[in-house]
Image (cartoon, rainbow, N blue to C red; front, top):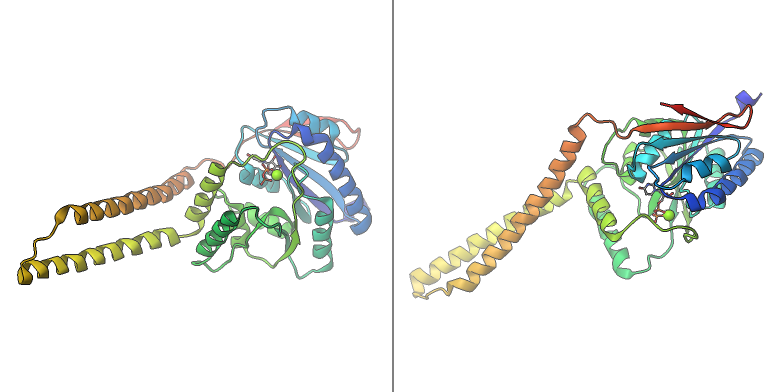
Length: 327
Ligand code: UDP
Ligand code: MG
């Protein structure tokens, strides 16, 4: 009878979250109970230890109940890759992806699962952060980012939507077939398509530990998004290069006429400086940008796996003890 129950996999990556381990395990337990009683689904938890340097994996192994596995990666690969590792290990009819730092609540998770259960025509339900960005400048930057990246493709990357989502097994399997090494999940989720629905939510404040994102990380991540999903930056630079060249031609013609017909001597230094600095700057920007794309091409062309698993620790449901297996 247990075989016929629908299965929900919960995929949660963690990196140095030992402090949240017992609280998150508690949340998972409550979530599992609710999912089982409301939707009659069996829950399997897949936690990915993204190269933590603390004893998070041991703490999770002790705190988790029911059916679970902790996949330990060989080092820190970044959250995006950790999520892929989780999806690779999932076999469920539905997959919920959530953070393990308690910022993603049980209520929103249940709400998303309910949407998917009640609407067979929807394949993915994602949580869209409706919290106002603290600084106006940052929210404008985010707007600019999304309008640029969405301006040249057939699919739209929704604003403020992250990994917190529930999807059908078919979608999870489709996502695992995308083996990009430099991963930008928001883009991959959108690229994969399917019928997606957003529900608004506000993430909880981080009660324990600290965010793993620095401002520099964010900038690098946005660049990654661009270079793997958009040619727009290259086009903008090419266009401004052409405009600069055109301006140079017009200015040259003006100088030529002034010298030939009016005998005006051209004060050279300032205009030279402007041209040199402007074009030099444009050149360097363009080179850097091309370098970014070349780097992406290079890392994708190397035939390395996206991540390496150190080992997997599984619950042994029969006697409740955890067993470790290499693989
Ligand atoms: N995380 C991870 N690998 C990393 C960084 C973060 O697996 O290299 C996990 C982290 O433990 C957390 C989730 O990804 O469960 C979200 O990370 P974080 O809270 O730092 O990001 P934020 O919520 O600030 O966007
Ligand atoms: Mg967080």
